[in-house]
Image (cartoon, rainbow, N blue to C red; front, side, top):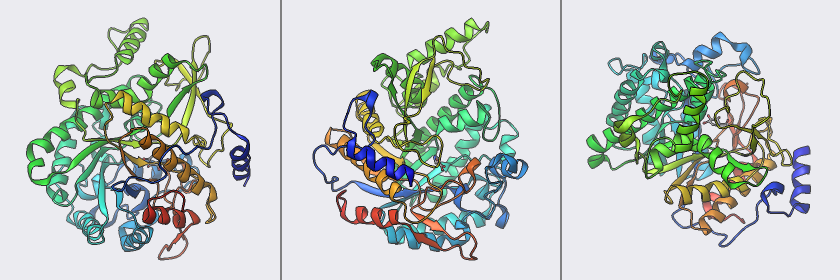
Length: 496
Ligand code: NOJ
């Protein structure tokens, strides 16, 4: 309620466009209609919605292990064992997808559901049948499946060998991806490889807040980045070599990016900080030269040597891998939620031993003048999306961008007007960017329905549909935002 009020006040009185006094709402610029071929969809992920954690021969992932072992680390002590039961209730999901009128549905495949130990020599046919059914039903209803291969469900058996901290994962992932192409590639034409490398690597292998809970900031996260990039690059090359001719699909790496604004309005600061925020994932894939950004390579090496180490904590990709990874995506898949402000770290002491921005040498802060969602990290800053899209246009040769996530959390309830404002403003940001020459072709917000929000359990809700968690059939009901988004899908026009 308070944030809505604040939002209305800001909407009425805020007018500056400058970055240091960033206005929270966005102003329309140019053509108010989306291009005819622009696609609208919606997103989810397997672990967050499927439930059936051990049904029909499914193996375990690190997230099941983590939630079972450490319920105290989940805000409401819950887990995703049943969640909203999409494994059993996919037909209910299909119904709301149809109701919403989306062009595409982004969902993920749980690796251990189809290969219980991760290794492809042991397959679980029932898991395969489930995803075949999902894909077939989507297509029969005119909804394109966009499939994420890995949304953080590392099979426990592979984590035993270090997961993304061991280069062994590259061939394991490659085998898995090859099977996915064989099993589903006749019908799936848009693939996303590894969801949000930055979140996966920082939380899993840097500050250790998520499984596999490895605490090694500035070492484990970099190791993870290199293996993620190699697994992604190798998958792309393998697809091109073995499958593309027949299947004609496209592949992207879904990157999570906060747009960064310098408190001092200093463009050099932004350029450097964005190299750490985004370049670590994107520069090796989308830049003309490939490899990590030169500033990142230089600064991490400098810091590592100053620490008395023999070499950089950021492993070099080397000539071979640099060329495999360079250009290994057909589009840039972008997950955008919010923007941050940065200022130089110089002179400031950061006592947090898990502080993982040492190398970038910036400290970040939130746009606290803008409304905040239920998630502590999520502020309402749509201008950041417009500016990020322009950054991509200029930095990465105007590559095609698909927005694969964007969403607003609240504590629940169907009168979710802030969610409507959030999506409306972010779609406006996209439209402004398109009107300014950016090559954005689709919008796939998070999320279809309320689901398990990892360490936040069920306390933060992102869905267009609410789920009745106490009823046996977990009915899905549209919120006000579903009614709004539905109109957008039918009209392709923001002002309906
Ligand atoms: C990013 C992740 O991909 C998704 O799984 C998560 O629920 C949302 N962000 C919201 O935090």
